[in-house]
Amino acid sequence: MKPSIQRRAGLVCAIALLCAAAGCTTSVRQVTDTRPVLRNSAPSTISELRIADTALESNNFDLATSLYEKAVQADPKSVPGLTGLGNTLYAVGDYTRAGVYYQRASQIDPKATPPLIGIARVAIHQRRFDDAIATYKRVLTITPNDPLACAGLGAALDLSGDHAHAQALLRAALQANPGDPMLSVNLGLSLTLAGDPRQGANVLLDVTRFPAAPPQARQNLALAYGLLGNDDAAAAILSRDLPKSSVQDNLRFYELQRARDGQGAQPVKSVAVSAIATPRVQTASVK
Image (cartoon, rainbow, N blue to C red):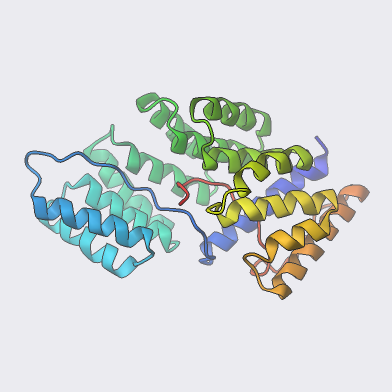
């Protein structure tokens, strides 16, 4: 692997995290759990939690927050309510406070996987990759081959620079969960960042051929084509989600990366991050 490719991996992932913190639009669904009906759970509370989950998926954060808070007021030890509050804060970029609610939920039920996945996602955004890796591995001891945990673990490994391990894990997870879009998106990006954009593009093409493919898959595919020098294909993909000015910004970014890779130079540092459709790893389920 070229050293410059490794340096670029750090740059683009850092930009991705900055964009996420700035509230860029994505199509990731926040983590919600499918919860059984418990004998001591009031039907109205169960219904309100389901409405809160739907509101969160629809980005209606005010309604979701109100309903989750109501559930926690009724039962301060409500793991779904606490996790939902964490998911809502995570969705708006308040990762520190989200982590507090996830930790509270996990302390109440250490075997509940949704708050653990929330804890791991917060760790990724705070660039505590070792913590994220350890937490995702803990989830996988509870629910082996869980695609959400595997995708998150692959993302954490990639962001820590361990592309080979990430790819091996994601390939194994795809064998257990054939066609899972999260796993495929992360594998395609991992291959691209590790210096094999052609193979990365092939993997991402399998995801983007579906009409409901998330924008992250298309943006990662555009990156792969851009690094291969196929600007026409990259522009056509980006124009589905971005205005013309932003498409041109991305093409210039890809050109700079190709030039610097060829010269063995450090990646460009001064990039207008608000304009670049940066590569995104999937740590939450896609619609």
